[in-house]
Figure 1 (cartoon, helix red, strand yellow):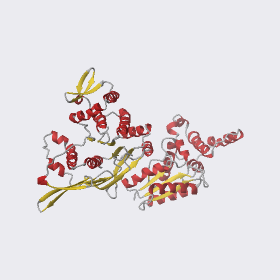
Figure 2 (cartoon, helix red, strand yellow):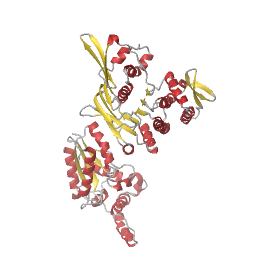
Figure 3 (cartoon, chains in turn yellow, cyan):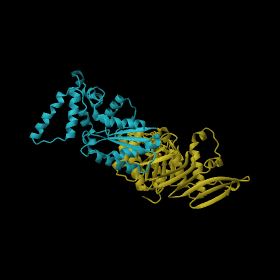
Figure 4 (tube, rainbow over the protein chains, first blue to last red):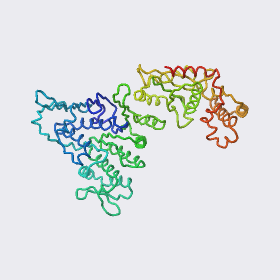
Length: 320
Length: 208
């Protein structure tokens, strides 16, 4: 297992997690569970944990998780208040084998301070003096269920180009939809060629954008982390085996740790078939569920053999 | 209290459901340890560990307090099979004081499986199935061996299909004479003493 991969994590006071611990993560981790059990929140906590490498990247991570949640509202006129977006994650504590991260707002006699902990540093800043500057970490990506924006795809596609993998991306897209002949960025817009003409990705179904987001992100996050929320969104079940095979192969080749969520049995079945076909021992399925007695969330780790058993024996592996 | 019963195969499930109905007890029966390939069950308890791992999460999610496990004695016998099952429970669950297990081994005189028990409690005339005894002797004379387990399964199939199904039903034997349909008919005597230990086990599980 690569040293930069998250293997164990503790999350405190973040969304639905009071004090949550989980371990056993591999290179590719698929998470299933009921609605509102915390699948996305879990990935957000992991994202913050690996992203917070300095104060600016910490700020960026805190802001971006709220930003993603408010995507639709922003589209319909919600003004982004950066300070509020950051303060939304007050009290968060995420510790892993990679990084210990925490953020807390303290108010002492009217003096408000931000307390950041990351990379074994504790930084206290008076809010009035805080710059709210932020920086991006290029090889950590979070894809929500809508996929990436044109700008993000354009940025990630440059990684595909740098590695001369345009043909690989085209082959994956062609397998996805045989009418797609090629993919290019033209006038800073992602476009697919069909019937000899390039058309913007937004003219295609959601699945095309989601697939392009996933594949280009895998190249962009070499030696880093990729988080994919509702990874099968917009993708026909018959294509999921190929998609998972591509994720397993590329993540291994590019040394990317992948976390993905799904609600779909078909997606989990495809994942299981792909991990068995490739004999991928570094891929795991996790069930996220709530303990009925304690009301605490717990995570169960299923290796490929156990997952296959539960898939074929009416198992209850999605929180039910 | 939230109790759950684990059985080995679908046939066990149909049988236990019929018996529970007869003794007027309600216990939830989970999906069997083996569900897809009937002959997978011949491997003994190889998949029980997978089933228990799956149950461990169900215990937390659904608040199960007691789990009953019913397995065949096979040729291993009651003591040996109970020990094997207990070892798997210990391996998967370790210390979980709030959860109790109870085990019952289906048997006739210490060995056998569901079909052996069913044969012992059949309540209808069985001329077609009984002729298999002569067939078995014929096999022996021709140096062909058939395990007692396989013979009993075959005997039950013939009993269900040819002794207990009407001519009309036999035309739809796949759905009218299969084990699920047959165990809903009055072709077994659920008051036979061979079932007393099992009934006691089920009653205890339902009231635990």
